[in-house]
Length: 221
Image (cartoon, rainbow, N blue to C red; front, side):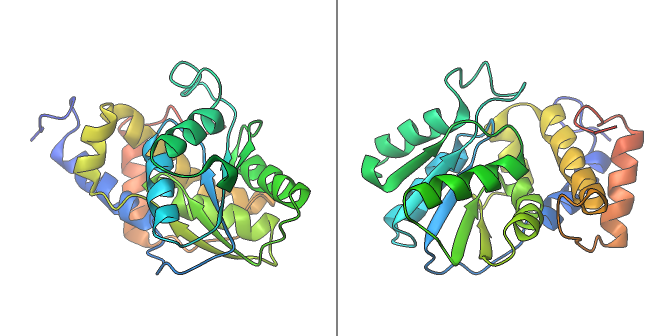
């Protein structure tokens, strides 16, 4: 039986929800030295970063990200630049934000943000990664590999998948991203890009089902 979300079936939605929940780390948040807001097509990351800043969890916020094929049209001056402007509009002081405008992948988000922080004389021991909900686990695994002496926590907007789909307005893109991010969680440790994460059997089965159903535009070869 289909639902009213752009041809996504109820079965596909159930599979996607398993992957959605797996991607989120469910970390308990506490004060950290800095936060890094990871650029993407989702301006909600900037809004959530601003909300967490205002709650007093960190004194310094880095926005990182240049452009990708999915963001060049939406954020023509780069993800980090637009995220910074949005956060300032939401009350974050400009002097609390550092900008990393060049990263084009998650590894660069981490490594280049580390360089920007070091250039500002900041050498954190605890870092909060703020991302899209389904990017938490991949960003955590990447950061642990590239910056192993730092303790990382993850945060994202607390949204159910149904609500996130409505907020983005492109179900195919979101399911493609869910599948693509899980592929990277599985494959990147073999390439030395990330630490290994256990993938439950039901999550792996859901992943294989959605690949068979054609949610493949974000897969790497």
